[in-house]
Each structure stands twice: as structure tokens, then as C-alpha cells.
Image (tube, rainbow, N blue to C red):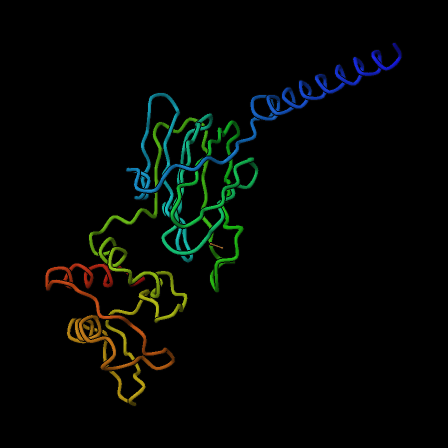
Length: 253
Ligand code: CUA
């Protein structure tokens, strides 16, 4: 008899514990609004290009692209009360995407699409930081979301718009050459156009159309001082070369 009572108590306790756990999970999900990051298979458009899509009301889809060492877009301005469905992919290594003052915190793993949702009920400037060590420029990898009262429409900065940048990205150039002044495996593209380039053979060239096409087509005929001769040959058409040049010229500040 006594054993039976104990068994019943134990059973009740176990069932109660399971129900309590489920209730806590439900509370964390709906009550606290904690977002468990989802993962969408890569190859799903439009997640692979940095973009902002406005839906009805104050609902936005924001597709971030992360790379060493930047978020695209870099600045997003939305009205107070906006809900952002955020996705992020990485073009190179693992990055983090954390929005200070919110509970959005994503791991951006190459080959996957990280996803989360956040609502901004208070105006202010929310900084977005990378919280995964991703190399030399990690400390400076940041962006921001500005939440403004009474804003009629959203605004966005730092989207890669020019065909030249898309090409440099598609051909893999940006994996080694930054566009923000930081030195990577190769020299940065920022402020590089028209500037002298010192070579390991002791000569100096100017980064112009001639030298640029020579470097792209026969990368290791010459080596820039301070860098290793490890650039692969890039297959491009003359028209593509031209577009890349146009973009490099834009990168002068
Ligand atoms: Cu990206 Cu740290």
C-alpha cells in the first residue's frame, strides 16, 4: 500500500515537472520574446544578397551579408515600432550578429542563413556588432540601426550597389582585398586607384588600368611589397575589368 502511494506521488511529480518545463519554454518563447535562431538552407533567394524589403505596416525583411570586416547594409533607419525579420549570411568566415539593447544574437556560419526577428519599440541608435573573432579587423566590424519617431519610410546605407563591387565579390577578390582600408592577405582597395604601388622587384607602378589588368590576368608576374605572391589568376572579360576599375575609382575617399 505504502509503495503504491509513493509511486503515485513520484508519477505526479514527474508529470508536473514535465508540464512546468513546457510552460517555461512557452513563456520564454512568447512571454519573454526570446528568439531561437533558425537556419534556412543556403541557396534560398533573396537571402544571399544584402537587401531590405518593406512589407505592409512596419514590417521589414532585412537580409544582411557579413564579410571580413563589415555588415551590409551598414546603416538602416526605420520608424519606431518597426519589426525586422533579419537574416544574415557570411561570405567568408564565421561572424556574429548582435544588436545591442535587444535579444537578437545570431551566429553567422558560412553556408547557412541565420535568422531572427526583433521589434524596436523605443527610438534610438542600436549598434550591431560582430561577436565572433573573425580576424584582424574584427574589432571594427560594426553597423547600426537607427530607430526614429515619425519616420515615413526606411533608409539604408552601405548596400553594394555597383556592378563592379558585385563582380569583385563574385570573383572572390574581396576575400583578400578589403574595401575599408584594412590590409588583408592582399592590399586594400580603398584609396588605391591612381596611387603608387611598390613592388618587390624594387620598381614602383601606379595602380591604373594597365597595371590593374596585368595584376588580374598575370597576378604573380609582379608582387606588391609586403605581401606574399599567392594571388590566383582571375578569369575576366575586358568589359568586366572595366566595371571593376570603375568601382575601385569610387573607393577613393
Ligand atoms: Cu566578424 Cu568578428
